[in-house]
Image 1: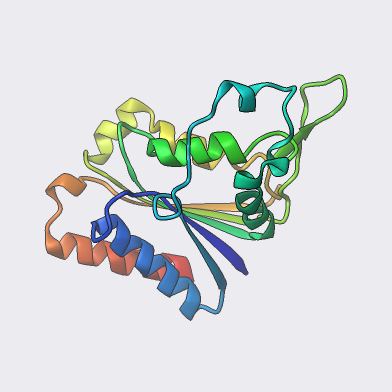
Image 2 (image 1 turned 180 degrees about the vertical axis):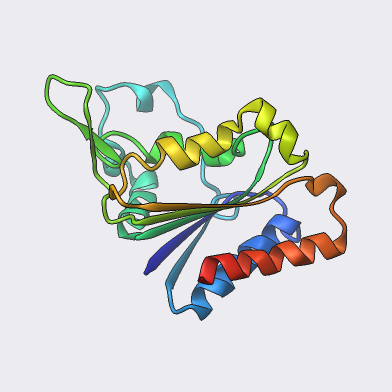
Length: 194
């Protein structure tokens, strides 16, 4: 499978970067074609300006800075997101990427005269999320896990109707010791290749 790993964390050497490396290695060992998109290292600009938001401007794929990102998404059959959960959701960098790349004519199309959405990324048959939470699981359940809802529900709309999703999360990261982190790295490895 062609796997696009979308990574969002600003600090190299963080636990998130260890997760990124583990994901890329596990997918490679399993024989998948891996494309790593490191949003911070690539200098992606998550800023959506008024001109870009306007329906009178060119489509996203006509914008040189977005075209390469769109092409990578269109090649992918499996999306793997690796990021820390901050304030219950995805980092601003990743949210900005979604806002700018997952737009009409790329991720979906609308039927003329209707708001019905037609999926445009049906080649994607699997989406996985590898994330960490500073707080315990119960705290995030009370908050409603907005990041989880975003990526497991809304984001799947433009995919193949039988696309599978996978959520691999380490809760309580702020209190996690070295053994817990090592065990989570092993879990990521196991769950991605099974």
